[in-house]
Amino acid sequence: MIDDIFKEKRGVKRIRCRISLKQEKKDFQAKPIALKEAIAKNISSQGLFFETDKKLPLGSEIRMQLVMPGLGRDINVSAKIVRIEEVELDTKFGVGVIFVNISAEDKQYIVQHIEQMDIVRLLDIAREKGASDLHLTCEYPPAVRVNGEISTMDMVKLNAEDLRRIVYSIMTESQITQFEKDKELDFGFSSGPASRFRVNIHQQRGSVEATFRLIASRIPSIPNLGLPAVVETFAGLTEGIVIVAGPTGSGKTTTLTSMVDTINKQREAVVICLERPIEYLHQNIKSIIKQREIGVDTNSFSAALKSTMRQDPDVIMVGEMDDPETVKTAITAAETGYLVLTSLHAPNTTQAIDRLVSNFPVEYKKNILSQLSRCLKGIVMQLLLPRKDGKGRVVATEVVIANEAIRRVIRDDDMTQMINIIRTGATQKMHSMEDSIRKLYENDIISKETAETFSAEFKKSLTLE
Image (tube, rainbow, N blue to C red):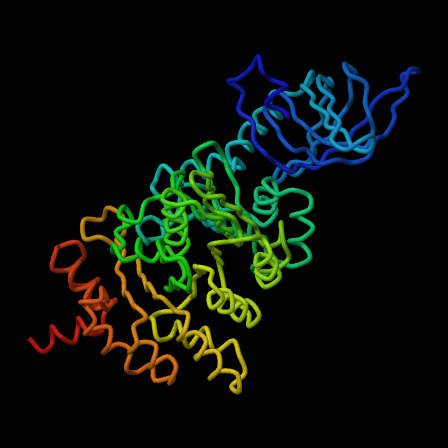
């Protein structure tokens, strides 16, 4: 890549990019030969790297026209080929060039362009700010979410063409093809050894946009996340299903990852993780961890889950249960002796169960509830609340232990009784979300306003006092 081209010039700033270029070289009679258009992969103020289907002679000189966004004209340069590498056998070649003739004005524009289009720099800034997310939106400056609050970076607005080039710069050709077909794409991206992000590419009003979710470089432990000790107990189970529920952005994936990491450190097991996309990367310690990404290693959660049953698993982690076949297979796996860890998008525990069974026609609902009541081990409901001191967020939880009373209300589809069982189940390590929020308030971790916002019961109790 271009990094290799300029080993002697490590101070040169270069970025991933997708800049259209036209090439022209001269034959042995000094006549110009027009070459196909190409896309630059990397660029610096001193050279670039592109791919072509022609094997060009090392050391030869070519003329190039760079189509730079926002400039209003092409940049014409002469460049010398200093590196050739085979990308695909005899069909595609990577070409590294250095500029040998470029105007000072054009060189300065490339430098400015690099500063504006450097996605790695944007991600580094987001990480340094302690952001959980980076948003790239058309006709809006880059924005970050820090401690739950959105703020814009001190940068210019991104137009549609610049934004598309920035986003496409971190995508492979196959990912671009898939995105342009489906208009949606999720994948993991590492901008460096210590920086990994979950990326969602999408369209808004025809413009390509992106959201980057920062993933911690180290898997946090269950205690470090502030989760109750019973979550470690759930990780120690050998069968049944455990559900982690909560709204989007409440840390469900991190909780599941920490449970898998606990298993990995404590016992020998085969753990198969079905994820979309893969976020945290596990290393085998005591367990064998297999991470399969939906859309890359398999086509769907349901297909992967069926195949998993034939892969000698002890533990199955299902990132999402978003269709009837996945739900049915997961419950069957839990019934037949596997530990299944999974997540559901839901605002509370009763709606988590309603959400799960709503995947099925009414005539199947009773049977699914009956199956779930037999294999459910517990539910962890979680929210992330802003800390009073402004230093990040803290988790509030609700824990359901599947005792006989819980199994009965699930089997009978009488969810209105569940909260009363939770409130009276403290001896069995159950607690309600209201109890958790009240405890955080009494310990001066969250403000009164936050407690009132996230707990109607808390607000009601203050009114009665």
